[in-house]
Length: 412
Image (cartoon, rainbow, N blue to C red):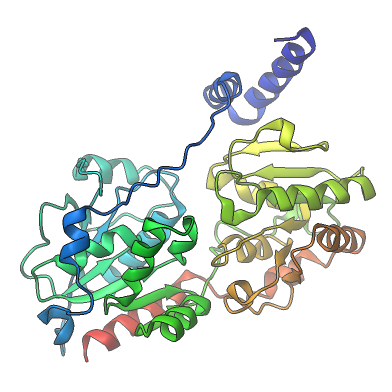
């Protein structure tokens, strides 16, 4: 390590200690000292050969041919999901709606499924999640999936695509549902896992989707019965702070190079052009670990932040770049709630999810995006106007949509 780099890292370390505490600062140093990883895509199917053969979606079982209905009273609901982690946004959103069903009087049980065969300690995992503010505290038990869910289950949810296989094969009469948060075949190159994921939309489950784009795509292209809930923002977490109601100058980029659908390099190319045009504007990056050699402009790299750290950061910014090549991210509405103008790539996957007039949709051209960011930072809208554009809508409203669609399907 060169002397100059050592001095730079020392300065970054002490800055991180002041900003985030010694434990997190040491973790960041350990990440930077680690050798760069070269990811090898594992193309093995995430479904066993036996399950591939057993799931004959052209000849559905009785539970799908004659779905169970519950005409009144609370419903016994089973969910099958991969084991959640503290920072998993998909699990946090899913648990939000499990909690919504519990509040509506329904009973939920969460089954933990790992396609590789390992089992999670459900009670210990639940106790850990109770310490994470992004997760609601559930009444539901967290149990390892051992063959099948409980016999009395009346509704059974698949979540990530690989869970649709054990849900299809479960011997219970429970009505099948699919909690769909993204078009998951696009997570893979065209191959086995792409096809195995895509086939799950043909299983005959009732889809409850994150936003209208997924509902439209799954119903139109795969004939899936589906309903959607609209996105929202938690105003208790994301809002305009008193100190940041006036002019702002920073730009935020949701930077996740490990997630190809977030178009990291296209975003960096756009920001490099923006940085040339507006070198005095601070560019903030957050979302994951970055190779500094891939970011050819001055920036502040926040890496992965706790949710509690996001609102203060957003309140420093007038514009944000959020790219998504599949279903829209939750970030644009959260940014608006904090008084930031989101710039997003144009397309039905984003426009069908939110028609908020303050989202700036742009062609996926780095030059156009850079110009759009310049326009916003040169003449930023009033942060309070952006926040008010959400109309006070929060996740309670989305929960009503979700619960209404679920109960309507269960009542037949």
